[in-house]
Length: 166
Image (cartoon, rainbow, N blue to C red):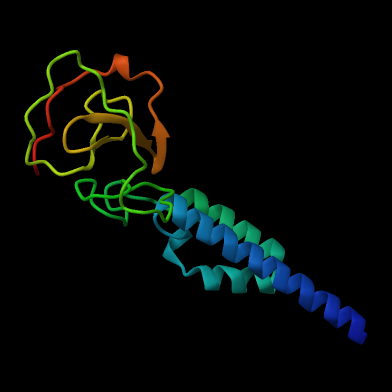
């Protein structure tokens, strides 16, 4: 086959575009699941997609379905350190949350505790984590690595006191 210069330029641009798509899909999978499909580097996925869109797409879909992800071994900070809780989508953000309103328990304020402000497993079990401000549970919660505001904290179950130190 004889390709003209413009045909080769179009093929190269399309190959680069497909390669970029393969790379971005692999990186998105890594951010969500904690690893790339089959554990292959995202750049290799981009190269496979650059060589052939159809081959790259078929291999990527097979790898995505067959990749086993251990939910316990996700990269990220420990949930007991200050900052964002671990999760599939971990935004880059400051290590302290925005100010939040503490729960009103109706009881007198508890004496200050030795537990510093940090994320802990949600005592209600409705979310993955809840922010302890050092004095009380706040309405700041997290699910799947995304911070939320608990709009109905009165349905909270579990201990009212400070969390246990790990």
